[in-house]
Length: 333
Image (cartoon, rainbow, N blue to C red):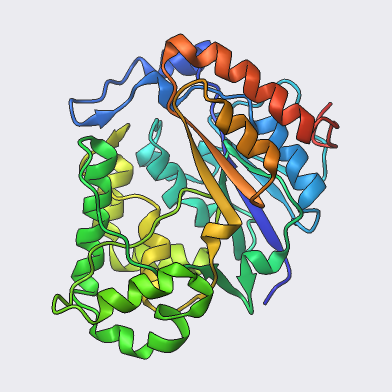
């Protein structure tokens, strides 16, 4: 394995007037996800850079992907930083885009990106020291092949998850191929209680998958994984990338890692112990306590806040993060 591991971060300044003017030239249809909360800056990017420098100094390069934007505090001269505009790597026919899907599905086209990289939304953070081996072992991503039932929650994101599952079922209509992975990857003891969950499901009369675990935390990928799915499903990815906003007809980046795991190209790990996705829905003291507890190595602060409580939660979250990551990084001016 090449020792180089990069990080790719996606970020947008949803308050930028130039970007807003461009966005307003396009309108999503009723099946599109284009609410402004999807583009709201939660103020975590600065702390993400600080956390990389403090807890993951082994990172080779940090690729910040934006729509011709950059935060004013960013030190563009940092040798580890690569500022990437959408037009630098996304095929022109998909631009402009206001959907995360074409931005993510084309990561493998970024010039200079290492074969091994970590995809990291701007709301993700390291909060404890972390090693390369938490993400890659012998050149393979560390992941968790565990089943988890698809849940019905009306909305575009649920539609996208069902579309993912249809694609997975196309290639793997049942668990018959799992026999090749059974002991080392499907029934791995490192999964903890998920081991027993998989064991129970494997011996059920129903032999199809009921869904796969898709934790919303930073995950490792390789450029080869992306190219493999593009080669197999060009029309589907092309259609998804053609949508200006997230659509109920889309698939998302989860399919890259799911197909890769079902191909057996991964090393088992209990990534549920590695990171935690925190749904920020209201002003809940338990959330700030969880962050301060540093129970996990990584967290994702998913902004699902109403406009009414956003300012309060934003301020409290900034104060909490400043306790953990108060020192400026070399990525800041």
